[in-house]
Length: 192
Image (tube, rainbow, N blue to C red; front, side):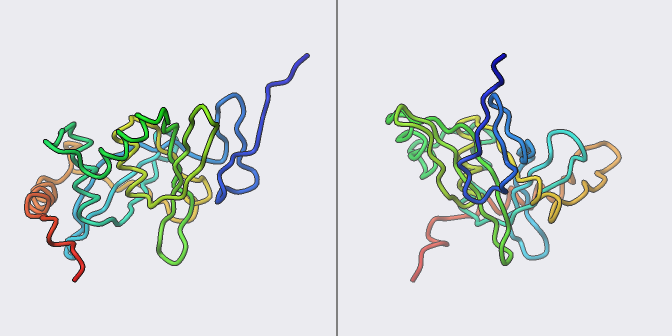
């Protein structure tokens, strides 16, 4: 009797017990991209991930304005007249025959989150370190699954807060975020 093949994940930041068996990844939790919101009063964009099943813990990650806009545009399916950086990167990977298999939010060190892109090409599988915001922006464009390390969720995952009685997000927060996105200009982020 032949047993299914199993191998350790090439994920460098994954714990030793992360295992891939017949395409199922153990040690990580599937996440839904809930969206991007504006954290008040600091007006800081936050990307919200939530466990697909189970306890439905939330993983809020602070991100920059351009990344927030990029993720929001991808969620909404908006195609800019000229490709943004994440659109360009998707197009380059696609032209080179590289598939984004999935992304994993791996850890948090000193208040900074880390992620990995898991890529597949004819040359083989590759794991590339990434900022979570970039990984999520690419996953949204490729339709690739997003995972978080189970140990990370155990450490920093938040139990989902109760929404308004109608189950809808607070319109005031959404309006503030829309205003923020509308006011973002590339010049705002130039060094100088």
